[in-house]
Image (cartoon, rainbow, N blue to C red; front, top):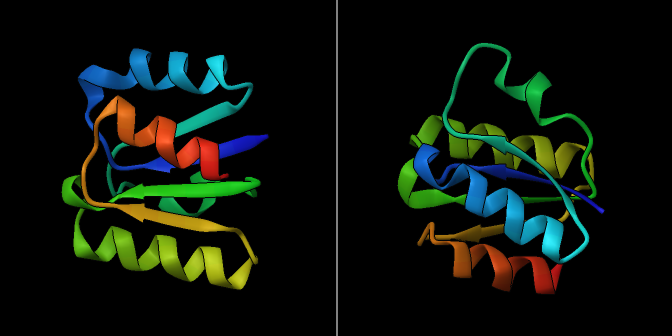
Length: 91
């Protein structure tokens, strides 16, 4: 299953990737609102948004993309690796 993670901390990227791989998921990690943000999301099987580490604009864009493409979306305030694991169990 391909999951796109939006938000989170750059320094935890390796841990996020390892946690996803351990659960059998491939993870695309986008840390912030950047040029071509919507295109970088792609067409994943699920999206996870860590809301405390991204701008309101990026969150709005992510929700809009998820709704328009019928992608399951989970929004979580905390951005720890354990939060990602919990979301992946529900994905």
